[in-house]
Image 1 (tube, rainbow, N blue to C red):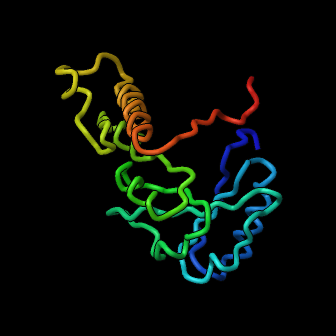
Image 2 (cartoon, rainbow, N blue to C red):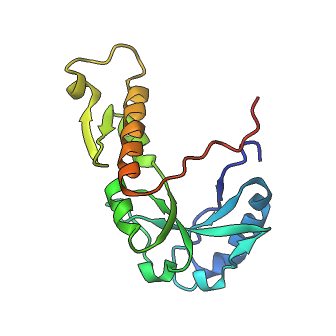
Amino acid sequence: AEVRPWIGTVPDTMSAAEIDRTLEQARQIAPWCEQVLVIPKAEGIIEYLPREIGGKPIVLGFSVPTEYGGTPLPLWDFQGWPCHLLGGNARRQLALCGYLNVISADGNLAWRLARRGVVITRQGTAGKTIRQLDGQRWQGKDAHLEALRRSLDNLRYFWSRHRAVEWRQSLAPST
């Protein structure tokens, strides 16, 4: 409620038995966001979801297949729904845009790599470390933040070359 995100997320729905819990949590967060993200992870969930809850549209979360996991459901189960892509690199996310109605995608990979000083390239994949790019060790203790800044700049470039992107500011009240 304090942050008022553009999209609010309920925990993954792992079975049809969790639909009531998912919908109740969605009702609780709907007043505080513009859209509610539901992440179905088993057959028989999507067909029971309403298109909106609390006056807010429901968006389906699709976990991009990676070595860490992914959504076990087929792509066609998500057709006709607005989707948010979870995980994966930008190139994998872009490939899914041809099959799904993708309205947003996360950038968790950028943060995870930045913690090791790795910068995502303008091609949307993991690249070199700051040390390799600059030819010297980063001065100061915030190399991970510089890696993240460079990655986000490169991701903005990547997406602007491939998709029309609407960059949004936070809905949180300014303090």
